Image 1: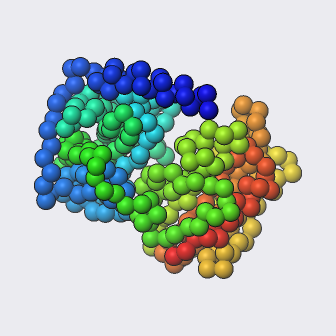
Image 2: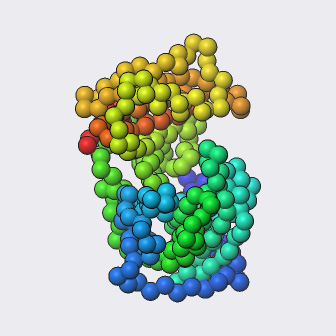
Image 3: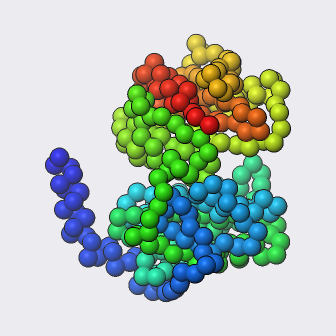
Amino acid sequence: MNRIILVILFILASLAVVCQGINSKAIEITNIDSKEYTAFETTKLKIKLPQGFTRRNATTYEHTLAQSYISVQELDGDVNRNFYTFDKKSMFQAGIVVKKETFFKINGFDAMMIDGDQYINEKELAVSILIIGNCSQTYLVMGSTPKPIQNNLNIEITNSLLSIIFDPKMESKPISESFTYKVNLEGTGLIECPPMGDTRTFTDDGNIPSKTDDMTSVTIHESRSGIQFTEEQKKDICMHRIKLYPLTWDENSKLEPQKYSTGKLSGYEIYANGVSKFLKTEFIYQLVLFDKDRYFVITGISYGDEKKCLDAFRKLANSIEL
């Protein structure tokens, strides 16, 4: 309770300063709503999309031919404090080399644009990231397109992000309505967090990352393949991701996928304990469930009790309703 009171007092004392904006030299932009705007359904945002972009889900629009996308993620807290989170060092650790940072006031709301290059699986992407919000709510909107860039698509994406309209009074849909499948969190102890693209995140306290000692979290990522996988390919998909974790696996852990069925979906499950570079034991859970032309990757991580976590992760997976 004392901690909450201190936080409230600090916020009240700093509102007059922080909410005026991090940069008094910010470029001012006024955007006017029109029929050209498209809403991110689960947010308080609208945007003018570049030509060729279509809806992938409630938080992502994509240009399939150009392998480009624009996606939104809600962040906790005051926008100006979030600006400090995305410094060049943290962006570099996320694989993004920052080339330019620019501050804006868009319809009176503080915003920061980050332009840079991102490297994923030896591919180079041009990325633009816009962070916008107020003293209580922040959104991160990210646009990405492969390099070399044709038809200046990266410029179109940047201009699209700058067309954003943030309206705290705008009505938005619940997160659960933005996906083609439903889950039941009853008995799992998990709380759903704002989604990012095709990935839903659940943690034991509703924060990303979790602020509890166990730091329990699980994600569900939906992928569309358009093909039918063999059993060996299904096993490989399950194994591939768990091998990416930088852990020293417990010698008693068997990194061998086992068949798993929820009754409606089937696939392969694997889980193990490993020691991180901080010498903490982590429980890692991986389940891949297949449904015709798509599959779901359920990934759980926790420093807590293995049996409790395994039960929660399986309950979540078993509750998937198509």
